[in-house]
Length: 236
Image (cartoon, rainbow, N blue to C red):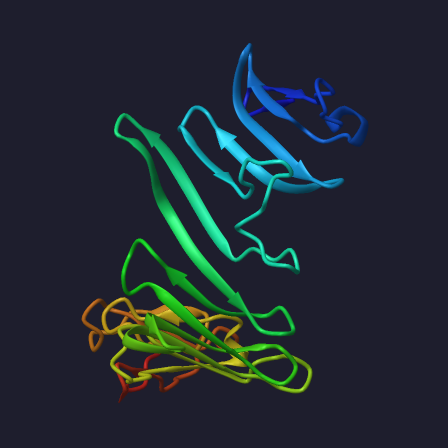
């Protein structure tokens, strides 16, 4: 395989008890004679182990034993713990350690970061298992405290979102609302509110010089909101 002008060798092993060659599963990726990636599988093609020797990092979802166990998965084969480990001179160190919880429909309801405090997320879904709320901060007893960020969606019956609200600092002030017309939010770099359309035009009112212009009608004068304040009209 050639990637970025460099040739890599894909190794499909059948040594020992491995059946990767028969199942067309990549066992190793090699740079010349050096193995840079090593993969392990559960069943026919479920990846449960990966090691990257160049960076000395790995995430193996299994624990050695006869038979091996899979502590990072629940009885429904869902990932409940994501743990990336780096080998150092002082021993192995986890630099990613996330606990993932699900509801009965297998929708993710929370992610707890066991390394970096305050970066947990609590998710809410509607009756059709669609995401409507992502609440970030410190997760404790099923709720978020010390909120750092929150994003809310209102969804139509067909799954489109007519509105989206974003609180970027956890103060409860949803300074801007992005409507479905914008095709995706842009954020004012000065006050971090949502700007509701695609094209930015200069304005002295914004500390960093941006308001939103109307993308479909370049000459139209429009009013937008920045930092929760109604802005004067701006011509693109």
